[in-house]
Image (cartoon, rainbow, N blue to C red; front, top):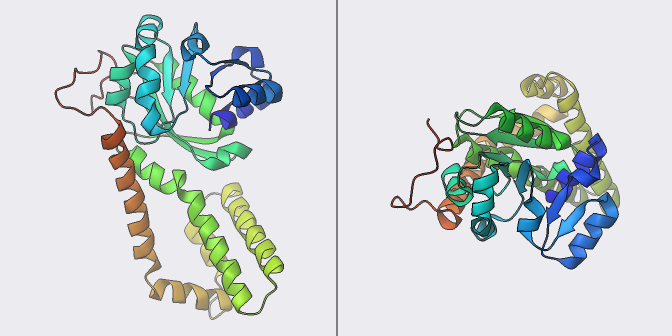
Length: 276
């Protein structure tokens, strides 16, 4: 995701010299410098020196270890901290970042090609400048939606964060079924991929009315209606609801597993607590 954001910002016109990256892998640092012309550092403290925005693009299990050594600098310089670490909540991030304003983002993998979908949340006390900075960065890789409360990010994780995998699975199953019905495997794969691509473009270029789009494809008494009725009879709606529920629960579990939700822990610094 860090690479996607860097690429999106550079493509949109952000000068590469304005971007500094903390990365432990020497090979990854070399690749980022070669591909985007950004500055890279093995030391995260050196990477964030003088930054206006610090993007935390790490796995949730690594967020605490990455941020805790930076707390003194973040507390003193107060850059906007934009976290894309799945599941880690504002309360934990605020304890690790001191008084720096914190914004959470939940992007998805299509950000790699500039077609991402990102949910954003910040506490009510977050400065507008921090909100604007976060939105500017995330909009470089796709659509951005602000959320009214932090719990909604767990649902965003289940819907759009994990969502591309659901469509890939559907395409895989469609292609497999077509092969079983006699279609050549290569042709089945190409047609399934093209169908996913085309349907996505249609959904994205219109008014987004998914019910209408489906109805327009589903002629009464036709082949599509026969397929849709079969899916509905098999309980597709309930299955999708259960699947998204499982993903949302896992997002909350990540917060509990890798966050710092100890009730005895110090409260977040003023200005960063969630006042919902």
